[in-house]
Length: 206
Image (cartoon, rainbow, N blue to C red):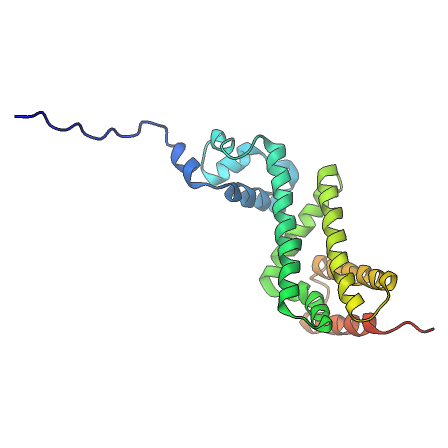
């Protein structure tokens, strides 16, 4: 009679390995962004995030070299989502530059998604006031967004220099409207957006 086949060996690694396998870099980036928004950059630490995610500190280093690497990728993810992907969606949504302009103006009033984006934007800009890496990321995002809006004004027939000036004014309005969402009700915000749309499409007097 042959001996019984050996039973499969059970894994003996610690429990931290299971969360490590299931978490992705995006899980850490999203958690870091949540802490940044709710508590500020000083609280975006490995131990805080590990506790929030229910894993050990060691599992963090499965995906990132160090805290600086995580922060760099938080900024990269923000730029991809809030600038590159958003610009691509705006370009695909309409080909008429007037409709594109209207879409840009409407960004601050697009419900919960707009409110969430504004909170992240405010936290990133607060971080940028004291950190060179974050400041560079914000400057690059601003330049890219203004460049897109300038292209829209250029498509409306404005000269390049004037298109960039109008784009800066519109972008300043969009950022301000996003960060001051409590100023006025829905009707007032809608009236402001219609006024800005008319104002910035008016040609200058000779």
